[in-house]
Length: 240
Length: 254
Ligand SMILES: Nc1ncnc2c1ncn2[C@@H]1O[C@H](COP(=O)(O)OP(=O)(O)OP(=O)(O)O)[C@@H](O)[C@H]1O
Ligand SMILES: [Mg+2]
Image 1 (tube, protein in one colour):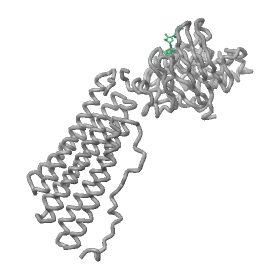
Image 2 (image 1 turned 120 degrees about the vertical axis):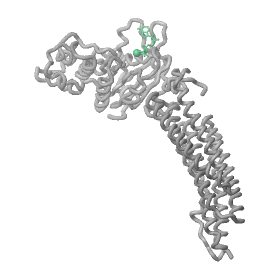
Image 3 (image 1 turned 30 degrees about the vertical axis):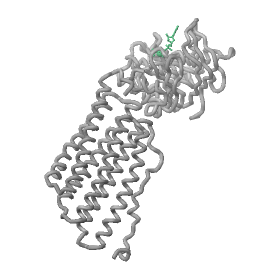
Image 4 (image 1 turned 45 degrees about the vertical axis):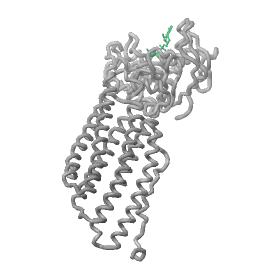
């Protein structure tokens, strides 16, 4: 913040909430990272940790909400400060949801049977997770620095996550049609892929908050939505 | 009518001797709307407000340039009678200033000098109507002959508003009308302002950003004699355009 509030405690309040959000972001990143690793390595201990970890993320969200309500009640924020206050609650909620998906991935990793497909799929999912983590870090950077350009880049990056999901969707579908024994594994893998794709949407929402805080407007164009799987038809004859 | 321009200021400059207090201000103030003037102390809010009904005429060193059109007529035209003008453009000051007269006479004063009533009953009606509109009638109807100065501060301020309304003005100018009042009296005045905009063009100067946000439809931000930003109150408080406005409303050092 280049300009300081006359009441310096106001700056401190805002900085405190931002740092709680960044702490949340760090934990959420770790949660996604570990969940993907647990999946690849079938590491039960790591998966358990991710689940425990999630409670910390939830309590940080609550902290952000309490701090923000306090900020609104005591400081009557206006202009950028007001937009920040609104976005704090949204960004915290986005991060909390992303954390939930990490937890969900960890949970599923506990029930997957080892197989070649599990191994292949897990590695793809880990790559996808890494991409979405990078995106999330950029979104949070853009948010704190009010960097519109970076936020816009993140929104565009979400397309790649969608495309990645589409590719995996087809792949898992193929495996399932090849052999019904693959169905359980592929269903889990598919849910994880879908969840990572959703993480991309939440990250996009954080990038949109960055733009809102910086400009007072939400990005006008429709978000690029490249998840086309809802239009994909299954044609058993195409596989054999 | 709503959304019609009531007051149009064009290239207005105000000087106190050499002091350039208002610099080339253009603004269009809408009818049946509450417009708030905000800005740091000494930026010229009161000066500009007073120029809207020629209150500045009473200050010797004060010189106004440019045009202020009320319903299209320049109020600084030599043929305009300032006394008539002030009946049309009423004013309420920061400190309640009831005359040392009865509550009744305080309100009846304006209608009497402007000959707005033919009979005692008609005058009674005007006084009651003004006190009702001023949200004071219920509290004073049984003590109309008591001195206005015996009322509480908040009641006195509402009496002054009733007095300003009694001449049936078209525009009501208020200079920090709530600065001496407690939150309840402030809320009553704000509620009143909200009612008044049904019939009047209201312009209010306030130091309270929250008050401006609560009562006004339009807000003008003044800084060092310039009108920096003027627009819908919501826009101005959520998304100000000028960095000076942003700094001021968020309490930052520029
Ligand atoms: N009668 C006067 N003679 C000389 N200078 C004056 C006079 N009245 C105001 N000024 C000057 O004109 C400038 C604007 O004053 P004005 O009273 O309009 O400010 P304001 O915005 O209403 O401030 P506040 O919020 O403190 O009431 C100030 O610099 C002030 O010193
Ligand atoms: Mg003043």
